[in-house]
Length: 128
Image 1 (cartoon, rainbow, N blue to C red):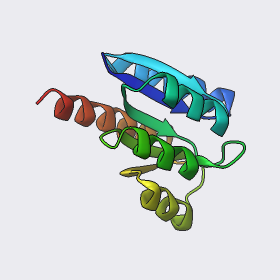
Image 2 (image 1 turned 135 degrees about the horizontal axis):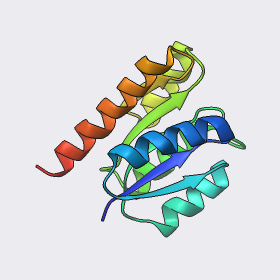
Image 3 (image 1 turned 60 degrees about the horizontal axis):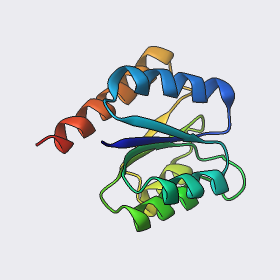
């Protein structure tokens, strides 16, 4: 069974992300609200195959989680999912190992389409 990590400290965004993942992901879902919680979850669930990670998450920020997940599970598929549209933040996330950056401050339908597309692509590639 595959596991999907959602790491975000905003209750509203966490709920939105979880709702999308629940509808499209066939595996388990785990969540974290801080960097430390996310690292603990990564240690507890070595089968994390995909993740949506916020940039501004206490205490060390999203790229720290991305680096840690990549170190533990190099094959994990990771997207930075943040309200910031900063190219600098996206670049930091990509350097840490994120393959995609989704700005959640964009129009809601467009964000959902991007997230659903990522999940579907990741699941398809996992099943090949």
